[in-house]
Length: 115
Image (tube, rainbow, N blue to C red; front, side, top):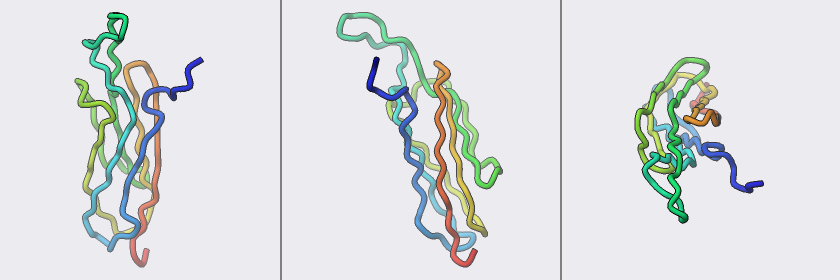
């Protein structure tokens, strides 16, 4: 039994601690995933099967902020930055799925001054 988590299970969703109403700010999603292209080989020379994150979605209070479909491996442990603004505090949620069917999700609270 492997002690390694399934690909894509570890992630960070980074948002500022506090933002002003309607202030534009960056939301950064970091996903720990090997993003295997299928071209590499292991130490014994056997091909490592392709497995890349296929879909990434971000929502703020149920409204789509970002929706992406990845066609090729970007890089191991991909990072996506999205700019947003809001008048009110709320919940930001990101989820993704890879070619092997592994899924992951993470959420963070956006806090707006006075809201």
